[in-house]
Length: 223
Image 1: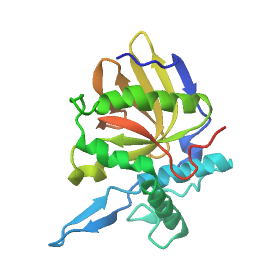
Image 2: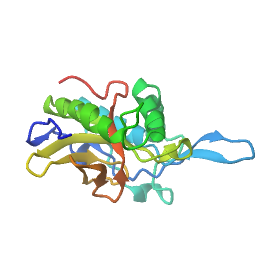
Image 3: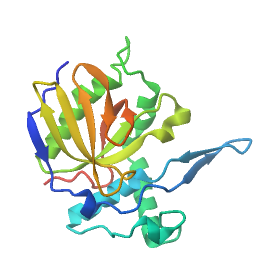
């Protein structure tokens, strides 16, 4: 079904070079240790980095611009450093809200509809994108949850970014979302989807199944 978005470019005055961090999302956190010693780990602290970047945006302050070279060889502040702990705290905040459940429930759903569920593609297009567009037109950048997992074992591959703009080409049936991705510090990343086919292609190399707006302790604030 074609999206009902306002055509044209709509963006918030969020800047990855100002509000994002200069080091990549190279953190590793073990969430669960399974019987036998196997572990489930997060692929970084993307939710914490995204939420803290928005904290700086809402405060009108630049994020600390310490680059990865300062933290060699890990490339990120070590555990115990105040910035590392602040990012960890915001990461935990991102798991404490109801919208975080979508990372689990969407990972268990297919792309297309079934007789019970509408599927990830339809939920993204009909529910989440209009909500995202309304927030961005109101001047509110959003933590956006990106889903790629298809089972609980790979749920840690899901991701969180900051969406700060979108452009809808009504003729081409194409939506482009402007992102700050903690995995690609200091540059704009685009996420492109089409009305007539599933999947969202990120300019930094990943194809995502769908996306949802995430409310993380005050990051989605009214203008």
